[in-house]
Image (cartoon, rainbow, N blue to C red; front, side, top):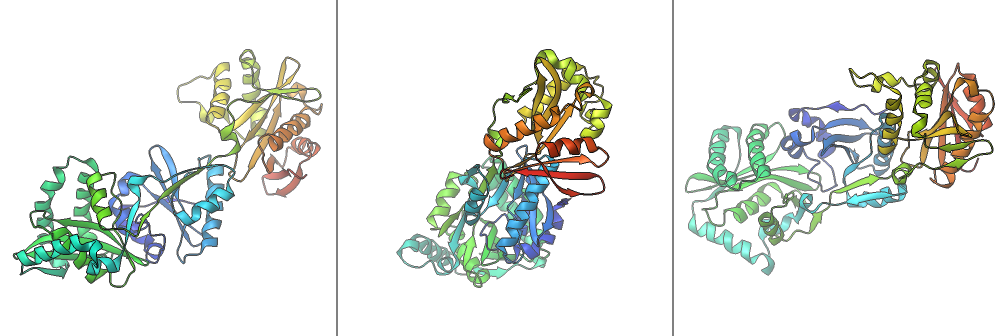
Length: 473
């Protein structure tokens, strides 16, 4: 099972082997991005199949970045996806992918029966041909060339130099001068970005960032900070004093000439929904606006709005009725049943709460509403005699099944009958491909029920014996 570790913003250098040669053209896979926006995502990471897997919490959901192979091995990334699926299933976490490059979306669409895909416009990266920025060629860049020429004419003493740590105080002083215009926007994201720029400056050397300083009249009037990632340089920071007309196209050109001569592309990141910034980025003629796709697979249970009613030869499988809450509480709270069920209800009781009969039934219904499991009462006539449950739904058409009966109804074949009927429903209506089950090795009676229901033993370890049934069995 995947093991995720929390990471501080200064520890993101651990990701450098994966970011250094990445070919996704996504700015998120860069040290600067992970450093500057760390607090928004509180990322954790795992390494599997020589792939980096980032896990983050955003807007109340857990998101997994699409695996990033250190060597660009697509097959390894797909194997890592399988490990993420297994982790989510075992941890009872809903699977959401983020930062999925466009080329991987079709494979995910084929892998899962049903998916939701979004590609939010304000977070897409602007990718440019680096050569275009170095020369601003042709009529399409005449505006930028004119601004550059005007800047040079007005400031003949201009210079562009590589930043060195000895200039840190001077660079910070420039940023303080620039800061007033930035704060005046009244934009929370712009303010946070400014705060992070100050923190990034001391890390320029540690992160091996590329930083250039534009001077005019003997003082700093602009700066740019970028990072090489594969065949592109990600421009994390580009600041200039607007009273120096043409400073922005000037610094963009000079930075590309000095620091992007060994790459094909410049990634100038997203526009965060700022329409002024969007207009400016589009005027520089991106060769691609790179999508950052979010992909959420839907499991069969996610499409079920009501629990079914399933008749068998002697039984009816259906939602437990309100009037049977006391009987259900006796079943769900039974010590012996819980021992073999592998679950202790006490772990879910809030501190200080003394559960009554209704609590057990409400908790079961909540699990269905949250799409964690599909519990059905086993009825013989009007009598509730047990429960059969589909749970641990996976993302490639699989689920686990379990059954428990009140002690006075054991030994009559009811468990196998309920299992058989529910599995048939799962194959036919939910379109599952595989159903799994397990029992404690000491609980031989459960094994007999599973075999009578047509399941085959698939494995054994020190604790459990495992079974499965597929649609073809």
